[in-house]
Length: 340
Image 1 (tube, helix red, strand yellow):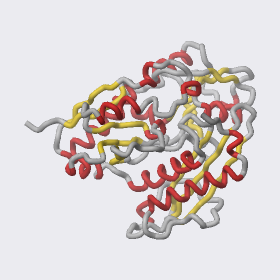
Image 2 (image 1 turned 60 degrees about the horizontal axis):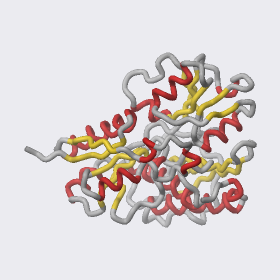
Image 3 (image 1 turned 90 degrees about the vertical axis):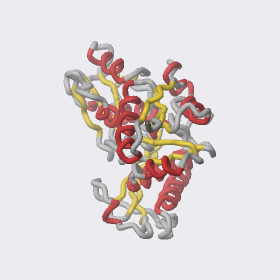
Image 4 (image 1 turned 60 degrees about the vertical axis):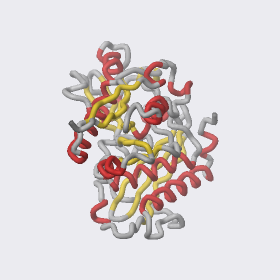
C-alpha cells in the first residue's frame, strides 16, 4: 500500500476546502493518496483584533512548527497570510494558478458600497479594507470582525451589520452557495487593490524534502502567478510592513511586462500614496505570450532602472517590487505605516 502524504491545514472550513483542492491536484501528479492533518493556529483561537495582535504569522507558525516536527509532509497557506520571510529549513515549493484576487462587499439588498446610507456599518478586521471603505464612502462606519465566513455572513443576514468585506477567492473555494441569499459586489482592482498574494495559495514543505515530492509539487506551480505575487510581496517586504499593514499591491503580466499597482493608506482620513508602474520582464527562455493575463491596459511605466536583466523573471519581479516600495517611501509612505 502506498504511504499517504500528510498535508497540514488549518481547521476552518475554508482552509480545509482549499487544502482539499490542492490535495486532489497533488494526488494526480504524485500518484499517492493525500491525508489532511488539521492543525490549530493562534489565529484560530485568539479572538483579539488582528490589528492588535499584529497578524503576521499567526496563521502560519503552528503549521510550520508541525511540519518541522515531522507531523506532516507539506502545508497549504493562503499566501496573503504568510510572512515575507521564509524560514531557512522550509521552501514554498508550489504556488498554483491564482483565483480571483478581488474583494467582495456583501450586503442584504444588493446596495453598492458607495450607495449605503450614512452611518451604515461595514464589518472587517483588515486595516487595509477599513481604509479603503473610508475612501469609497466616508459616511460609513466600520466594525472589527473575526470568525469564519459563515459567522461573518450571518451578522449581515441578521441585520447586525449592513455589509462585510470578504475575499472573492475564499467564497469561490467553498461548496454550494455560501452567500445564502445575500448579494455580493465585486470591487475592481483598479480602485480597490487587494493584499499582496490575495487569491493565491502557497504549498510549503521542507527544503530537504524528498526529490519526488518536490518534483510533484513543481508540477502544480504556475509561473505567471509566482512572478506576480513575488513582486507584490517584495513591495510589502520593502516597506518593512507586516501582513496587517494598511497597504495593497497587485501585479499582473501583460505582453512580457509586469504591471504593479501599490497603495499605502492612512487609517481613516482617506489620504493615500500610490504608484502604478510597468516594467519589462524579458524572462530568458520564456515566451512572453504564455505569461499574459487579462487586465486593464497599462497606463504608465517605470523608469526601467530595476527591470530584468533577461536571466531570471522571479528575480526581476522581486527587484521591481523593491523599487516600487522604495519610491513609495520616497513619497512619504513611511508616515502612514504602523511600526512594531
